[in-house]
Length: 568
Image (cartoon, rainbow, N blue to C red; front, side):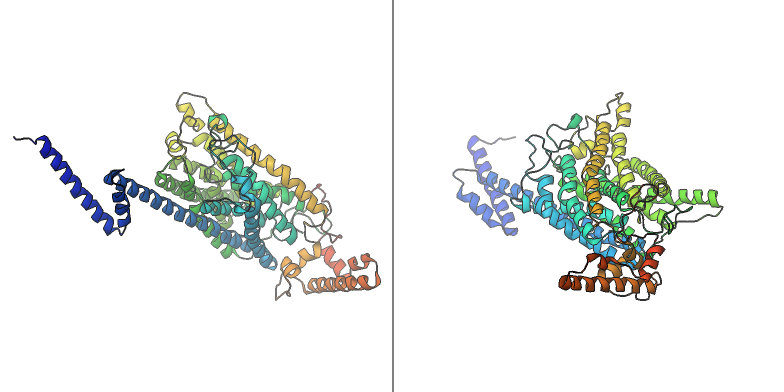
């Protein structure tokens, strides 16, 4: 067999190179990007044409991948923001019809307040100036008013999370919270309280962050999509708010302020709206959990991570819902002798499962998602019953769903995080779930310890800021709607209009409210002209006194202490 001479080999290589170059140029021309070849050909004396073209095409592929990631991040942000509609429908269906308009307005106000707070200072405190090579910080210090932000899709994604955290409290405080207080709390939460939590757990410079160059205990907190950052923050705020605000009139106490032998149920006016809200929230969770894979910096192969998150999200929600439904059915049958399929238990159980899996959706196996959902369903039922026993009024069960199930979710990661899954999502498997550590023959509980510390940090931080804030609002008389406003409904009190055929509102109470409003307007006008005593504007008519008595309160300012020491 003959062989090439050196000259022939050189000629063949040159010809092959020429053919490949022309083929590549033709390919580029087909792609309508001949400028790449022309630019490289102009630099042929300094740089090989083929290598130049290959580098340019590779960079183009990287740019295309980044563009695709940006579009998907925007889409995930839209799914998460659509959850605001789910919260609105859920809250609207859970309240009495005389408060529907007020509840809907507050949900929309949440989104507006969150956008303002996060735009001005929230993002800066949460992620401003983050750098994976710098020291740990308590809070961000740059990018106020979005100055200097280059990744605006990331800002949008994080804003959607902040708005979700703020709107969790909306349902808990329904039917009795003033408008001004609600706007103030929304801005404070998204502008300062939530950003500090997000910075600590998600920022590259957070002291609990798994993305810190020197993570706490060698691993940091794993909260993939926000069981602690979003849901525990919102749920903790709801607890402290309702402790100060007190229950709705007639829920736990009679007209004289004595505890009722059995709490009076206040069923929502539309189960259909509640069901619609539940489905919207479940749908939005596919942006919440799988969408969080798009911001991972430890891996370029985010597809499998997102797919696992979606599967685990589905399993946990389904198992938690059915667990809550059939457990409640069993308990009802045993205690009352009558089996009852409770739709509210099913809906809130599903939501509790979604909250619980949020922290570990990308780092646990599907069988573990089943276990997480199973326990979440039971925890929801237990905590919901416990709230009634201690007389904390939560109109939509946001505290059991978000605080209790969120706490379980963040804790479950410390037990059930799988080595392979952590490695794929976070780039390390040195510290894993405690059960897996035991299987390794180790008692290493670093991850579990981080998760426990995160629980105490979130609850403690929210208590430190929001509890005094709510006390101050209540002291100033800006927190709770007064008794007559609550009696006629916040739709009439704050948004005008009449009873409109609403059987929940007695006509004489509406007339009393209108008379009081007219008296105050007249008194204010006369006081300006004659400097008449201001107490005249606060006097009650006989109808008003009857309304106040019906509400079990003789002070229209809505303060007062209940017999158990709780602020009413």
